[in-house]
Length: 122
Image 1 (tube, rainbow, N blue to C red):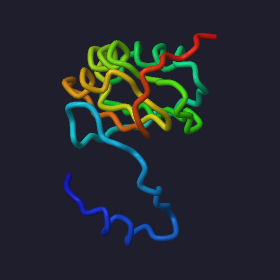
Image 2: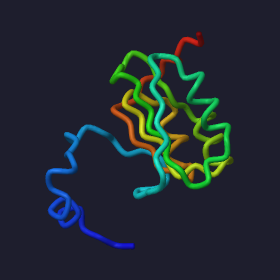
Image 3: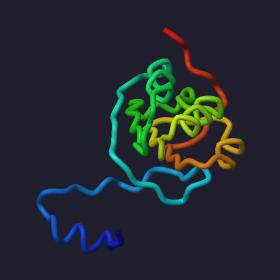
Image 4: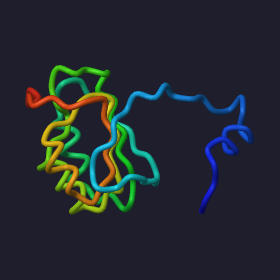
C-alpha cells in the first residue's frame, strides 16, 4: 500500500493529530509499519524486555517512557530479542543505548536520543 501523509491527513482532518517532530531514526529499517502495542514505563525497561520476548508478528511496540533522557529503555540485547521474535519496530519516548549495534539490526527504531546509562530494574 502506498499513500502520501499529506493526503492521509487531509482525508482525516479533525480526527487525527500531528506529533511534533522529535524522534531520531535508528535500526536497519528506514520505514516500518504494523499494528501498534503500547507500554508505559519510567526508567525501568523490565516490561519492555518482557513484551519483546513475546512473538511480535510484525507489530510495533510504542514505549511511553515519559520522555526521560536519564537512562536508556532499549539496548542492543533487547533489540536483538525483538528481531528474533518478529517485531517490526520499536518507538521509544525516551532514550536507547548501543545505537551502532542497533543500526545493524533488521528492525526500525525511533527514540528521542541515546544515553549509555542502563535502567534500574525494579
